[in-house]
Image (cartoon, rainbow, N blue to C red; front, side, top):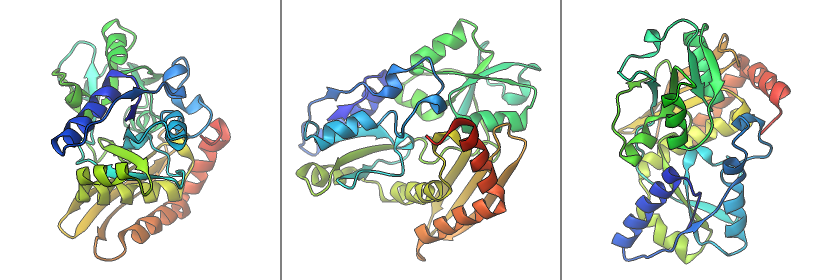
Length: 305
């Protein structure tokens, strides 16, 4: 089983290994260093190529060296090798973003001083923060979870924004403010662990037992919108689906880099009526509403990633 070597990635892989072992399937761990782990001096949007946390693991799988891989689903590009499949989508953990203040406490974004320095590695989070508070300094924040927390503690930032799921998986208890998902719509697939396997392999069959159907439905809707809009990680885009019963509420937006302009859709999709086609239609309408210009602006400035 392949995994990145960061503590959070290893914990996510351990979760999958434990669940497979409960089913009588034992696995050995193979750590793989990806380009996203190597070039920590650059913001993510400046790294060339798609899937900077995934590509090297894919190569090892295609070479037959790894049977299964564990990823954060939001790191997985929408364009994938035909030989590899998402064999399991685990039940989603928290999809939300959180704000951690250097001084601790649960004060939200409104409580930050004027001109405060806020760290994030995400174009989406940066644009959403600028939309909410144009006075903030949005600075690049790279490194694993422990490194990011250490940078906050030593005073590099007044606050940082992280995914709540990462702290929960690592068992870290600290004060923070959860950001409102209506204003800070999460990234597609945030909070979701997946298993990737070779198509038609025994590994695929074994790992399918871990699949959580409602989460797969939500995340595939999100991915279809993401794929339709395109642009890669340089585009500030958010999309989140909440499934309930036979429908899903889908909230999607594309923002300008400075957060000053955005297009947004908030709709209910029937899960009984071709939900992926409906999701694709949402993505197309976002583009016609002005999303195409916002995507083109981001790609022109940074190039497609």
